[in-house]
Image 1 (tube, one colour):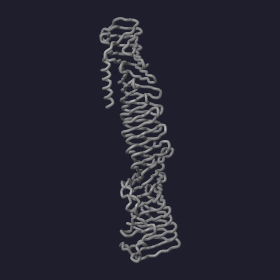
Image 2: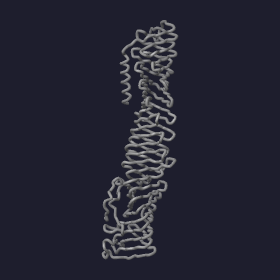
Image 3: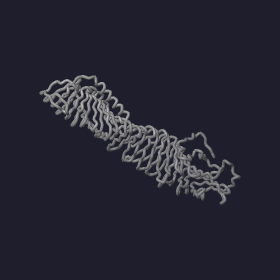
Image 4: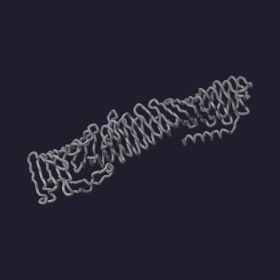
Length: 508
C-alpha cells in the first residue's frame, strides 16, 4: 500500500513537471477543415494526420484539434511513437497538451522492445514516459504473460507495478499476487502483498520477497511457506533456487511431513528438494507426532531429514548433544538415527535411556517401537540396566549384550547374553528389606513385576547368593561399571534443550 501511494505521488509530480507548457504542433494532414466534437468547435483533420509534442510523434486518420486549449482528439489508426522506439496503438485518443497526457482507449497495444501491453484504457504521460491502465491489462514478453486489474509502467527504468488480481504465467510456474513490481532490466519481480507461486513440483506462499524470472532464484519473507506433495516448509525468510531445488530457511523454520506425521524445527535449515536431504540447526527439534498425544521429541545441535524418491520422510539423523523425550522414555547420547518406517531408533556414543525408575546404558542401543509404544530395546556391548529401588539402593543387571522386552510400555523381562551379573534387593510384602541377591551366570533372564524385579532365571555356570545387606561392603552393592545419571534425565520435553556436561558421574 505504501508503494502504491508513492506511485500516485510520483505520477502527480510528473504531471506537474509536464505542465511546463509547450504547444502541440500539427505537422501535417491531408485535409483541413472545421468541425464540432462533443459540442466544441475544432479544426477537423483527416487523412494522414501527424502531431508532434516534445519528442513524441502521434499519428491518426481523423483528429479534432483544439489549438487554443492545446488538446486534440484522435481516431482511426491512432499511434504514438517515441524516439527510443516504443509505440502505442489504439482506437481513439484524447491528448491534453498542457499535461503531456494521452488517454488512449479501446484495443490499446503498447510495444516496447520484447514487451507488449494489451488493454482497453491506457493513460500515458508522454514527457515522463509513464503509462497506467486501470481497467485490466495483459503484458506479454518472451517468457511471461501477466494480467492485473491495475498496472503502471515506467519506460525509462523498464519497471512495472501491478495491483489486484495479478497473475504471472511462466512455462515453469504461475504466480498469483495482490501487489507485484517487476524490473525487467534485472528480470526480477518484487513481492509486496500476499502471493502464491504454483508449479508442477511445489507451491510457495509469502507476503514479501523477490523472484528472478531468469535465474529462478528467489527470497520469500513474511509468513513464507514452501509446499510439495507431502511436505510443508515455513520460515520467517526462505531462499529458494527452483533449478536446483535448494532452499534455505532462516528463523522459526518448521517442516511438516504428512506421510509420517513428523515436524522438524530450527532457526536455520537447508532444504534439498531433489537430493533427498534437509538440514536443521540452531535450536533444532524433530517431533514424531502421536495421535493420542504421546509424541516423541528429538533434539540435537544438527538434525538431518532424509526423504525417498516420492518426497516422503524416511530417516531422521540427530548429531551432537542429542536428547529425546517421550512420556515413558527419555534418552541422551552423542548421536542417533531414527528410522521412521520401522519405528526404530539407534543411539551411538555413550547412550543413556531412562524409563520409569530405570536407566539403560551400553555402547550402542537400538530402540524398537510398535504402534507408538515401546516394544523392545537391544543393548550392544557393556550393557547395563539399573533400577532405583530406594534412596540408597539400586537393582542392577550387566552383561555383554541385552534384549529388554516391554509390555504396555513397561519392562516385562530382560534377556542378558554373556557375562551376566545381577544385584537384586529382596523385599518382603510390606517392603521390608530382607537381603540382597548377588548372581552371575553366562546368560540370564530377569522378569519384572509392577514396582520391581519379580524373578531371575540363571542359565549355565550359575553363582548366586542371598546376603544380609549389613554384612556387605558398600562397594559390593554396585556392579562394575555402575554409574547413575538419573540427574541428567529430561523430566519434561523442554529439558531436551538443556545439556549437562559430562564432567562427573554420580551415584545418587
